[in-house]
Length: 359
Image 1: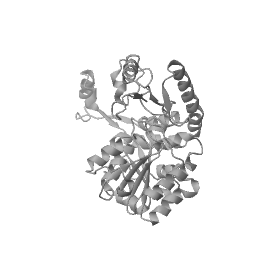
Image 2 (image 1 turned 180 degrees about the horizontal axis):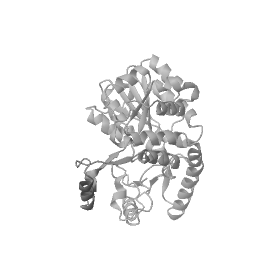
Image 3 (image 1 turned 90 degrees about the vertical axis):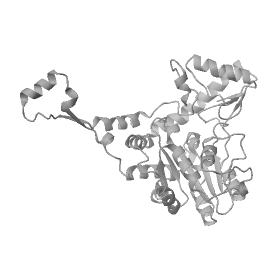
């Protein structure tokens, strides 16, 4: 995401997977209102000496006689936010399961904080990533390496399984039945399974029927296989500058275990207010589901005319395109030209180790 700082004038950022609609207008307005709650008053060590106060003003020492009050900025946020918890639990689990999901829900400073937390807390032992993809979101490997874990290619040997579905960057996706069957067949009792479903929100209004189900999570917990569903809200609602993510833990007890090791005040007041408004903006999501597949299809259509030898990967509803140009030289050139024209793309040589690919 930092390629935008390599351009002299940013036109459009194609290097990230955030929603192309940009930030949610209603959420921006809600966040802005926090800064509208500001008061300024005059104070001075001169007491009631009016002449002395006027002298200070004339000498342009205005800051010395002004006192600002901005609750959202100067106060610690509340430890909990019941409204945010209810809205998020309802969005993820449906209105009939709000209270049950709320007890299992944990917020963090972006999904990255939660990934790091879970990689440290999971039972000791090696980790594995999805065998269904050639490469996946690297944050899981980074977090596990920082926690001192070795990587294994055999999921049955792993105490921590890290799956990204839909997978970033390749765009591969396993439907619910296939994903649940794989977990049931490969996760060992006592293991933790992290399933990152951050990109599933783009699948359409039926997205919640295509991810790992609550019933399956409960059934696996009875077998001592603990499934944690990870969500990043900064991609679908285009707010990476605010940082907010969640994990839906398998049980309330596992949620409390993670919460007890989390740093306090992990989510700031502005991110909370933004997400509350964004979750209620159904019109924004409807526009996302309608526009994204059209934009993606148009992009592929135009690119395939220009470069008929390129191959394009990923589900048609995803917010990015994984492209094999077939040539490292071509990929290098595309990346450089993108920077020069203010439209950066992600070069898969960096971070992913695929020198002929761009995203």
